[in-house]
Image 1 (cartoon, helix red, strand yellow):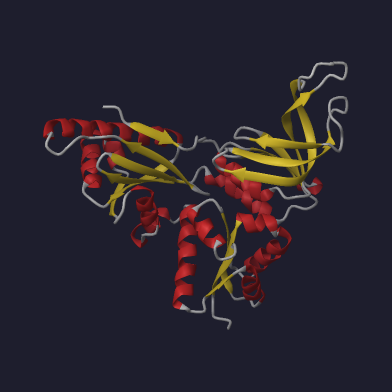
Image 2 (cartoon, helix red, strand yellow; image 1 turned 90 degrees about the vertical axis):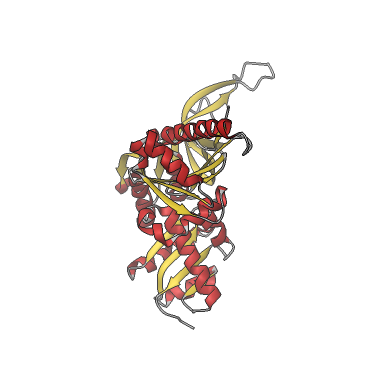
Length: 369
């Protein structure tokens, strides 16, 4: 029986490398190794920064009269950044701007170019001044690869949804197949075991590339228990990592249900994307109960920060990018009074909910109105 599985993202196990740090001259050179690194870099690189990297550019010979676009060459360029874009499904960080340095016989200084930065690429970033927020994000990127990851498996008969809980997002995988009708008991059991073997191979492929500390088996029925028994009998090394959790739904909804559960809070507390979801859920609960202990929307949050009342500040990366000059002073103010700051990926569930609140929210130490 053939079961089909679909992997949504490639994974890369190596940590970001900071190859050079010369803060006196505003220069940091890094090598990105995975998609989380690109997300962190998208927060660090700002409009007005300088960026330098190797790149592909089509070069047309001036004496070549043909209508072709010219030969594609690898050259090193510097640009002054005027735009950037990162979406995890493209697996590329796009950084555009005017060329400020490069081989003048091949490019025109002042013309526009876009770097397509992928895992494995090296880029130099030059700023007039490196702030604490940017340096912290680079250190987070270096550390994040070594933090344990969590696999959440949501099971129903013949179907499994798998979520790899990463720092900035959840990578989703799916496995499905027809295990047959309930009257074909012998054939059904054989197909179910084949399904379990396919699922186990998928999980082992992920675990070979990622530092997975726990596997949470979940779902509304008994399939999670059946699969745990299969692992215990055949793959004892994996069974020892398993936690079983009942949920009311399966699929992606079941995965998100698991991540909100208090019972597994300690298992997941070091994973940023899980913290983000919990913090946003707490804000929403406070708003619904009208406790006065939450602020949301940029103006209301700024007032709370200025009053020294913010315990935890949440900002989506979209708001951070678009209003960086206004947002960074608020973040610094919160840190000065020993508050916490979280920048949340707008692509994830937590980021989407926070964007619906205006992109910024805060948990308060006390009510201010």
